[in-house]
Length: 261
Image (cartoon, rainbow, N blue to C red; front, side, top):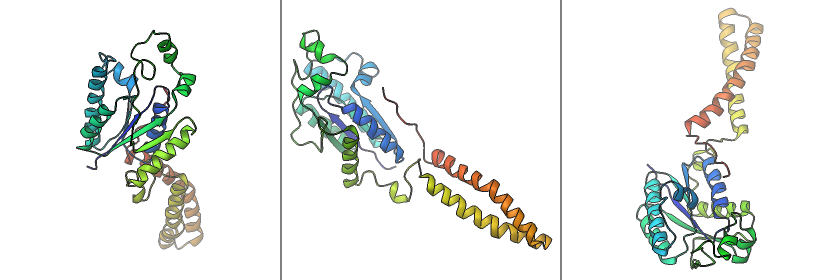
């Protein structure tokens, strides 16, 4: 089994980590990869609901996620992790854990604190600035900027789609996203024109050469053979096209596209 890899998105709250990760997930699934997204809100609600926000509690929380990501990647899953992960030493520890089993890519969603406060999608900065929320990264707790991340996304000036393209281009340079394309298709969403051409080329050959020849051999009537070929092509070309589309979904493990949360 080919191993997966881990993309670890880090950055201030509101920097766009999860928005980008969701679209990267969609893009990778469209190429036929098995992909899972682990983000801070979901993990705290499900796997680790008792996690606090002191430095040590955050460390334990993130190390648990690192081990989960490593296990998934070892079993062929591409894992997207979206966590503030504010401390350099903890991010280094996460990298060491994952890289024992799979490639690890640190993605820094770079955005100024002022812009994150302006966005404030969940209203958390406002509450932190009034003192309602303690140990809030960027306000009452530090965010230690990565010194040498694998990818830097300037989310203050680039669009989400531009950031996604930058991630995919990096993965291509690392030869991490080409393995299915090299096989001649684009994942479960094989292009419709390709399916149409396959249906036409195969069924036209069958319907206007092989089938009429068989009918002529049996009846001695070329006109009847031609009529049979036309009728057969009308029925079988659409049917073969549908077969191609269904097989593209089932054969390559369609897992569904994520939705915005």
